[in-house]
Image (tube, rainbow, N blue to C red; front, side, top):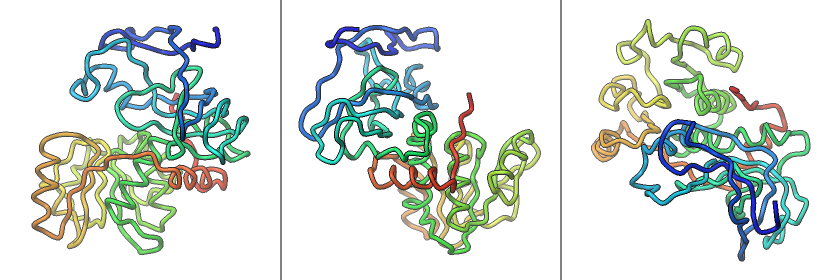
Amino acid sequence: MTETTRKAAVFDRYGDSDVLRIAEIPRPTISAGQILVKVKAAAINPKDTFIRKGRFKRFTGNDFPKTTGFDFAGVVVESLIEDLPMGMPVFGMLDGWHGATCAEYVVATREQVAIKPENVSFVEAAAIPLVGLTALQALRDDGKLRKNASQAVCINGASGGVGTMAVQIAKLHGATVTATASEHNHDFLYDLGVDTCLDYRQTDITQTHNQFDIFFDVFGNTKYQQAKSLLKLSGTWVSTVIKLHVFVSVMLSKLTRKSAKLVVVKANQADLQQLGNWLAEGAIRAIIHE
């Protein structure tokens, strides 16, 4: 690689994983308020696969080739940010719909990165930004999760990336956690701290008499109207999926005390640093599926 190019994973059309290839593309330059990071590790999430398959073409457009990846950890090699000098180990997440972290170098702003704790590996640090920020912002900001408030939380689809982070963050706040997942994941979820596991193949959570302060629909297969009876008087249903019924539910719920929310994850320096600190302290762990 020359100084003007970088190797990156790109795709020239929407499709399955076989559309990906490694190419040399222009090395990015930084401007005020940015850093250039030499990537040591990057993570792939469902968001990346959905974009690659063309599910969000209205946001990503049809200009190719496209780069991929939103999570990263690495070392600062160029900096126009005072507190992030060259050599600083960082981790973070890019906002928006145009991923670029599956590459040798990536440009980031201060809000998109945090300093990597010394006792956290680059792989662990790269594994938590998108899933951790989604879980934290969904539970705390949308669901109003509070420390030691004895809240009851249901995480629907708890065994994936966001779900496992949501379990750990909810337990950190002292919540009682009910999780839905296939039976073969129950022991794993109990090990993370879940209080009750339900096999979604055997039990329809919406037909139970459980009552929750927060119903976090990570999997995206339960509508607000179905989950409404499970919510306490001021409870909140939070979804991760961008679908019409979610937007309609958010609007209609303004007429009732039982809220419906769509989590829209945003890079946040303070939240990233909090996740990094929790990881360093052993309060949460990165779940790396493969």
